[in-house]
Amino acid sequence: MKFVVLVKEVPDTYGDRKLDLATGLADRHATDAVLDEIGERALEVALSVADARPDAEIIVMTMGPESAVAALRKGLSMGADSAVHVVDDGLAGADLGTTARVLAAAIRRIEPDVVLTGNLSTDGSGGVLAAMVAELLDVPNVTSLASVEFADDSVSGRRAVEGGSFTASSALPAVVSITEALPDARFPSFRGIMAGKKKPVETWGLAELEVDGAQSENARSIVIAVAERPAREAGVKVVDDGGDSAEQLADYLVAQRLIGGSR
Image (cartoon, one colour):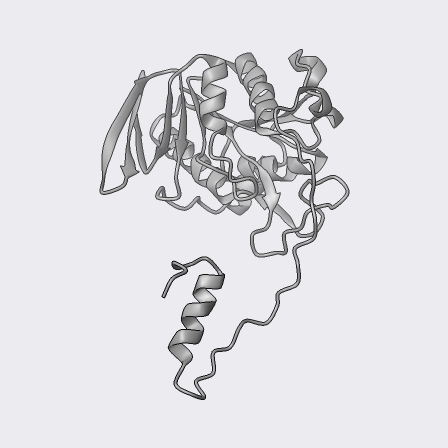
């Protein structure tokens, strides 16, 4: 069984998040870059399958700048067999549509049984990439699973919904996304770290994938304006000097359109 696990380099959630006011894009130099935790969990799912199936092959894949190779190396140190890095200057600031098209083109070259990923990244939080890739690959998508099991030619899992859950299943090949309900990822061992440095990482650009991915020409969504977040102002104090605090509070809520305007 061959897995492609999609991972992503993202700004550390414990650091400051800023936008570049000139481009409208995330300032990825404002804080440390890390492998997204949900991607680590997706890789852990594949590694758990490989623990019981020696024939399983796991390829970690990312689309990102040169620095994103560090995220791939961490995936390799955790136990993945090889990695694919899709990197090209024409992909800077790619929107979800462009990202999905380019990743789908890369996945077609590998022909995996399973494309495995997290349900949404911590930077963009789009939550639709798995479904978009599945549509472009013309395979089923089984998304946002809180548990997952693989058989030789099928996948099934439980998806949480309001008030309960239900089971979703599909034949393979398929695109599968998981939520944070799945277990934490394993820590790379020293031996794994050393082995990860020697495992192969292939680098593919738009030319190799035969995709026209230039963001300026193919974006379906663009940023038209961006501004610095305004400074936080002091709140309104309600002081009960004459027993009218309730009226003051009501007037404030009306002014903020949080309650009706007639008393």
